[in-house]
Length: 288
Ligand code: PMP
Image (cartoon, rainbow, N blue to C red; front, side, top):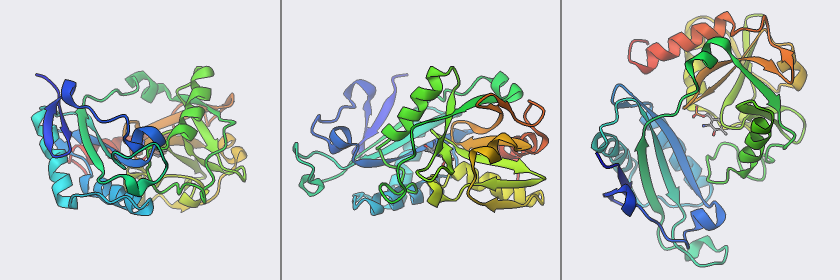
């Protein structure tokens, strides 16, 4: 079956899903997006993703020329049209067609597209054995420059960290902010466990408030595990009992080594494994 892309109100064949080279999303990274999972043919946490998308857009003065419910409907329609049961959706809103100047208000209307695709997951072995990471030297964007809460098309900061990770033969890198505190990984949130308590950096440290993280925090609290938002240093990561990342694509993945420091006993810890299991159950509608 040919892949169908939703583009500005219509489902079109992949070959016909084209946008202009004058789109400011392409020329300047001027736009916002969401990555969303599909589990059991249901779009996961769609309302939360739509809310974050509209807030991201509002913060950059980007008008999404559709209602939230119409856009949510378009996401479901795209998933259905492609027969996706387990997959990934990319929902993108760009500033639209303009000219070669920066002026975003030249762009008459935003461009909206939705891609529903299969998901490329980390291999199962990585979840069982845990992942190794490095600290990136690339400093996270200053939170007062581009708000970390906005999921914008400006991902070069994260891509530079990802390049450092790949150059070091690991899949992810930890990014630190201008003050040296942990912000997030290049595409995931950071959580550690110390003495039975989960710690995670606040958004102000340079972290996107992750939807997966939000669910995992809720699930942890249901298990009577305390969760504290707090600035974390490199030292805190090195001496953590457990360490894991959360994200739409990665879900919950244990970290077992950072900058050659082994975390805990070198295997994903018990709280990490419990929360991965609880998240699976929740995503597949078997949990709370
Ligand atoms: N931080 C960054 C920079 C991300 O791109 C993402 C999403 N891939 C996350 C955190 C995790 O957010 P979510 O759980 O909403 O996918």
